[in-house]
Length: 248
Ligand code: NAP
Image (cartoon, rainbow, N blue to C red; front, side, top):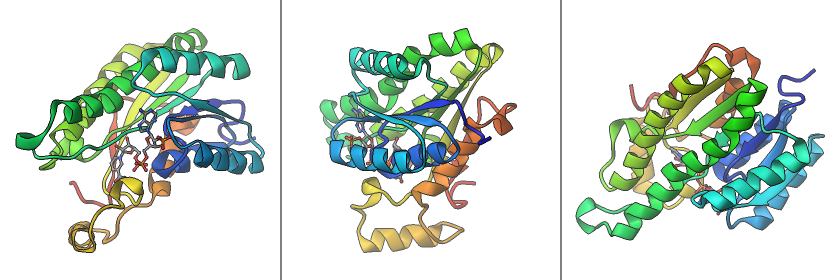
């Protein structure tokens, strides 16, 4: 029997990047996947086909995670199909970088709404049923920038630091109900989010990372798979860096 057989996992922003790698990893470990997307329908369909070719089921659901009503509808749709959600991966996120002196209110609000309120919306919508079944896994994707800060990312680092506080508080609230809550803090990972970096910035970054390379989405996904499994039963409230040794 596979480690996640019989489990259903909801992965936000699962159509591309880190979310796609996590959805595929969890499916590979035996979970059925509720694949959330916001704008990337075609890519979501491709990931769904890949999941089905692994022998798992996949339900694609569109929802803007910053809107509570859309998230509640998504969770209801998922529960109608699978009866439950066992694993929630709060992965979806955006950047909207600017120096604070130039940052518009809208740039601040959008990042906080998706990266932080989105995590509240999704977590709030799944925990009642997880509490009832006395089992659940919540994995939040934060960032090393939420721990160490980064010039030009006050909005993003505040949202990711917020996710860390949220993770620890949720872990304390939910531990007695058999639910673990952990966060992964990736360093620089090769996805659309970091694709815009110039060759120079990329080289400087690589040389500052002890393992001398940017991370791959799978580097994050392997840890998400482990944290979702019963092998991680005794781990909660932790923020685990996956960053090639960049922040230590
Ligand atoms: P990405 O390639 O830019 O993908 C972002 C994902 O978020 C997409 O699937 C997108 O869905 C989804 N999304 C954005 N806004 C959404 C909304 N309102 N509702 C639902 N989904 C939404 O990013 P990534 O690099 O894979 O990042 C994934 C997570 O890792 C993010 O939380 C990010 O902050 C974090 N992270 C990334 C890095 C890195 O170096 N890449 C480092 C640290 C942390 P659609 O395409 O469907 O719109």
